[in-house]
Length: 247
Ligand code: SAH
Image (cartoon, rainbow, N blue to C red; front, side):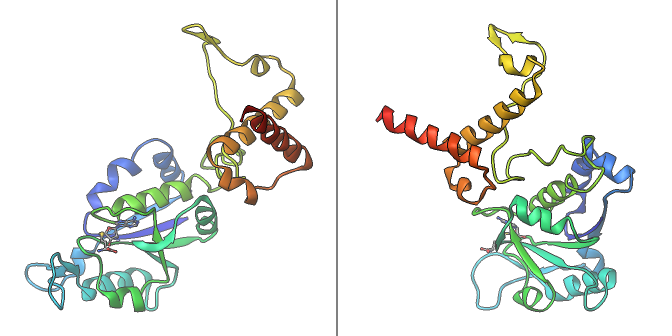
């Protein structure tokens, strides 16, 4: 998969993309990230990319000309692939959106700064708008990195374990079960016995029940859209019944 990122601050991407799993994904050509500095498409002497808002008010607005020129130069006119504007006004990014985006071979990402981009960019250039949550950052670079990270780890071959992404929280609609590693006892706290038992059926049942328990405790809102089996429903009914007894 290829990402084309349009930003005024390409340098903030490099350290993060150059470490760990994302670095390995790029070395193995599973995910390529191409960074484009919008400033390179500003034609005036000072390479100005922002200007004051019409109508007054504080802050600066990213000018349309360099953004259109950069995107059309790299992606064609109209853009040959989806172009996502990162904005707190977009649809909210979730694991489901990450899965959806991991299906396309190429994706453009446009990072705003200051008050954001001129409205005509939103109306006539981008094909999608994504927010990473209900808060406001200084720029779209962290949101773009976050999206690249979440999408890349879903691409075939990126995680060492091919099933690694399957059990993850939010992949199946549930939060994931807890993890333990060596030592078997740390400060007197032991690893649950079932993890050492070698009994695969019991282990699978424990993990499923732990995932259900965590989701029931922390994010009951997720349960209604999770794919639940009759056994899952029995277990949840038991949790509800025990809970009723406590009151
Ligand atoms: N004035 C804008 C916010 C500008 S924040 C408004 O109120 O809608 C500056 C830039 O940071 C935005 O253009 C966007 O690219 C990025 N940004 C800030 N918060 C974001 C969020 N929650 N999700 C995605 N991008 C965000």
